[in-house]
Image: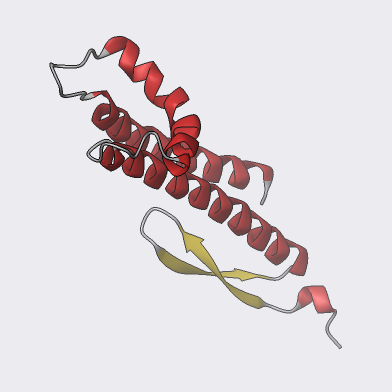
Length: 129
């Protein structure tokens, strides 16, 4: 009779860069649980990254509406997004009525966030999750 840990288990492990799933074969149930925990941690990181990206976009498009930044919703988003955008506003001055710093910040966030998620994935692999 086989021990429960000796069975071959098949799980779907997300392969984050390409949004596909890779089949992982494991003989150890503990290893399968580690894959699931690592996938959950990575998925939470991806959700946080996506939510902040959308908040920056909403803040940028909200500047097109005169009362957006004075509304409660606009002030809440500004409290969350302004610390990140202020870094770029120090180096990129507005050109007349056009402020390009949020657009540059969004592009930088997209690239740096991608590297951060890859780093998190590699860290999870390194520690065995």
